[in-house]
Length: 191
Image (cartoon, rainbow, N blue to C red):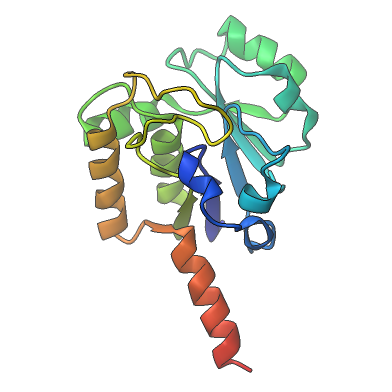
């Protein structure tokens, strides 16, 4: 896989009407946990080729047809009852390897890493570029673009932000806004 677009659930995802650009991305689009599309597609698009979720998954997310599904749990035993139950509903489900969680936690310096950080870390090892959209690094007063819930204290925004700055400095991740601008400019230059 050359490039992948990760759509985070941060409130910044509603700041730009990027839905059409997201849906036309040349590569898979991956969404997280309890992503919401209804009422938000103008901003976040409607494509969802891959899904990464923790063991607190909502049943309605299983209505989509995914190319790949990543089940995320600290209990990476293939006989994990939650994973087995999930796999019954989502036959394409695969357990995200424990080393992805641990490697991300080592780099970040704490174990409460977000799903987005773990998947970005994992994908950065296998893709030439990981593009991010809707990643706010828990720096806002709202956790999800689709609700008014506060972020809580499970994730540490300063650690998340520093982690993604490292990946950005290494050229492993970029922001979709930059990709979209490059694509538009490139198309204009080639006309």
